Image (tube, rainbow, N blue to C red; front, side, top):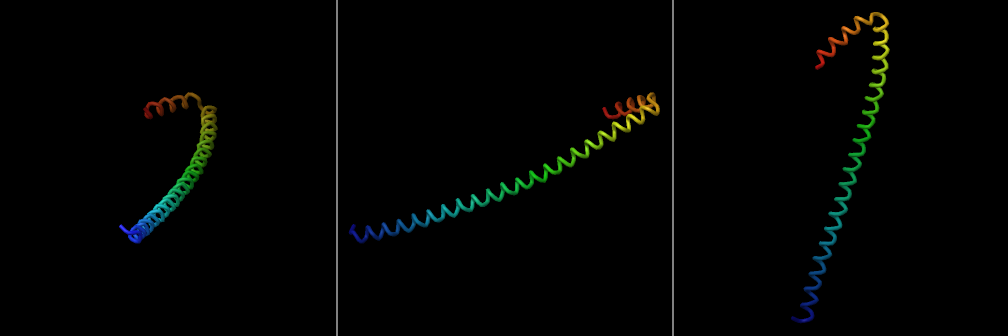
Length: 94
């Protein structure tokens, strides 16, 4: 094998290796971009879920306060009747 043939083969091999390096770099860049976009989407979804959970907790707190106030009102009106209502509600929930 002559020197010119070796240089020709080396040139071909270097072009193929350079192309592989460029393809690998593009793949890594695209993969990084895709993962970054996915992470951003998951973060925004988590933020929306957190906001919904905070709203639900706020509503639940208000309902608990209102429920406590209503129970107090019912108890002050007729405690015996409230006990009967609680017994009937407990048996239907089970």
